[in-house]
Structure formats: structure tokens, C-alpha cells
Length: 359
Ligand SMILES: *[C@@H]1O[C@H](CO)[C@@H](O)[C@H](O)[C@H]1NC(C)=O
Ligand SMILES: *[C@@H]1O[C@H](CO)[C@@H](O)[C@H](O)[C@H]1NC(C)=O
Ligand SMILES: *[C@@H]1O[C@H](CO)[C@@H](O)[C@H](O)[C@H]1NC(C)=O
Image (cartoon, rainbow, N blue to C red; front, side):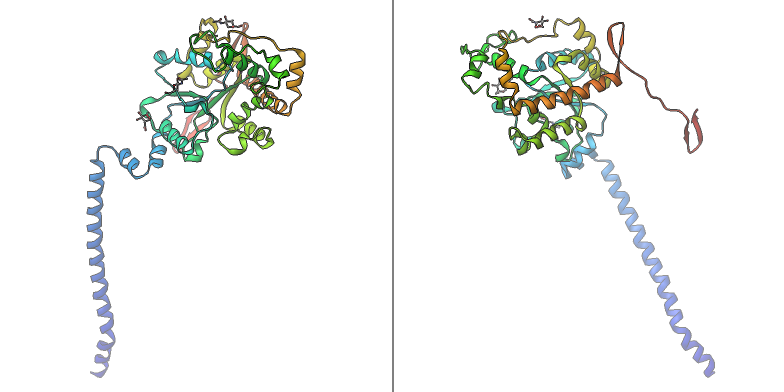
């Protein structure tokens, strides 16, 4: 009797514990059931929303950007350098819009400034990357390199065309005084001024100051204070680095046809037909500066002896070397006509979870 009561006494906590476990089990079971049905309700209501991306975009504009820019529709940005043949080139691209079903948009930066306000950079990056209705897109404008990644977006396909820096400056100098054959009526900033480049250099004028050569370096360097410091070694190095890693292709005014051939090979859907149009082209040189005088040997020597010229020329030579390398690896001459090298890679020995797919 005493023994069995002792057993009962010692067993009682076990029984209680058992009851508690069963109770907790049912309680949790109920909770899980409830959570599951709530979860389903939520899923159903999300699925019934008009557009999931729209909700995401309300939650976070940056997130929306990442979602929409997953599309493989190309986004090409050409931050053109004045007086490098950029007008003739963009003219060719405009001629493709119908045939290739592409959009070409000019970015008009007010006050003709190459530097953009930070909020404008952000707006531009966000707009370009998320504007699905305007893709495939080719944007062109006079602005220094804008770093898309700095704003949380994926980099676009950046392209550019550089020109021998002194040739470019002289062309710009006369363009400002005499205009060109394209927009004849338009009055240029220094219209009526008949000072030649030689005279300007002799008088140490402003528009032929060697500092005016500092342009291609900052345009490729970007929207950073140091890029605009005339003669900055850091800016030159940064421009080179961007040229190699941030630009898909940088061509040369002196090799426009080669640039166009490679570009068409990289993005055939966007640029299909541009090479043949360029070759047969009545549009190939739409803009020629109306009046130009070759400067004297002395003027050329003076300009070329400056530090700014040497640095700009270093970037130009660097670009030329890289472009030559691309031409060597990516093109071939066939009957005197430059052609892209194609189909240089394919996949084989493809195995998957189910074994051989392609031998
Ligand atoms: C850019 O916009 C300004 C102001 O609307 C206009 O005056 C100017 O002509 C435009 N520039 C070009 C190159 O179209
Ligand atoms: C981009 O900007 C244009 C012009 O301001 C506007 O019409 C368009 O709706 C914008 N697109 C997006 C996706 O923000
Ligand atoms: C512009 O100059 C180029 C090269 O000098 C020439 O081939 C072309 O015909 C000229 N274009 C016009 C419209 O005058």
C-alpha cells in the first residue's frame, strides 16, 4: 500500500508532463494551421495585385531599378566629345531607329555644362535604367562619365570616340567662329571673330589656351572634383582606368569605319546595317567645319610642348593602343573590307544532372 502510493506519487509529475506535452502539441498545431491559412491569404492577395513590380517600386525605387534592368535590352550611353565626328556618328544611329526598332535620345544638359548636379545624375541613371518603353536605347549627350554603380544601378554599355587633342581644339576653335555646313543659320559664340589660331596663340588668347585642351581626360574621368583639375595625374590615370573597365568600346575619329564595324559586331540587334550605311554613306560626314586654317609649325610646337597637351595626348595614345588591340583580335580584312571575326567560341561537352546534353 505505502509502496504503491509512493509510486503513484512519483508518477504524478510524469502524467502531468504528458498532458502538458499533448496540450502544447495541439496548441502549436492550431497556431501553424492558422499561420498557414494567413500566409495563403497573403499570397493570394499579392498574386491578385495588378503588378508586383509596381508594388516593389513603391517600396524602393532602387530595388525596382534592379528588377527592371534585368532585361537584356541594351542600354547604350555615348557621352560624346565635341568636335570628334560625334554628330556624323549619331546621325548614322538615328537612321537605324525604324529598321532596328530602337530608340535614340539626346540628353540636353542645360548651360552646356559637362558637369551634372548630383540629384540630376541620380535621376538620369534611374530614368535610363528603368524606362522599359524606351528600350533598346541609345542615349547621347555632352556630359562627363556618370558612374551608374555609384547610384546602385547596373552599368550601361558606355562608348566613346576620341580625337588627336590638338586637331580637336583647332577644329573647335574655327567651329566657334565660322560654324559648319549642318546648321548654317545658327549664330556661333564667336561669329565674326576672324583671328586665326596662330594669331590667337601669339596673343595668348583664351580660346587657344593650352588649358582648353583638358577635355577628353575629364570627360572619361567623370563627375569628380579631381577630374577637372587641369593637369591632374590622378585624373589621367582614372580616365585610362575607366576607358579599360567602364567603357565597352572607345574608338578614334581617325578610325571611324573601324569603330562602327566593331560596334555593329558587339550589338548586332541595335546597330545592324550601320557599317554598310557608313560605307555607301552620303551621311558619313554630315558636319564639316566651314573654315579652317592649318596653324604654323611654330604654333603646333608651342602647343605640343605644354604639359596639358602631353597628358591629353597620353590618353589619346593609350586609347589608340587599346583600340588597335581590339581591331587585331576582333576584325579581319576580307577583300579589302574590314569584317568582324565571328563565332570564335562555342560550347561543347555539355553535361547536366541527366548526363550528356551535347558532345
Ligand atoms: C537644349 O535645350 C535648350 C533649352 O531648351 C535649347 O535652347 C537648346 O537649343 C538645346 N540644345 C540642343 C543642342 O538642342
Ligand atoms: C523618364 O523620363 C521621361 C521624361 O521626363 C518620362 O516621360 C518617363 O516617364 C520617365 N520614365 C521612367 C521609367 O521614370
Ligand atoms: C566633309 O569632309 C569630308 C572629308 O574631307 C568629305 O569626304 C565630305 O564629302 C565632306 N562633307 C560635306 C557635306 O561637305
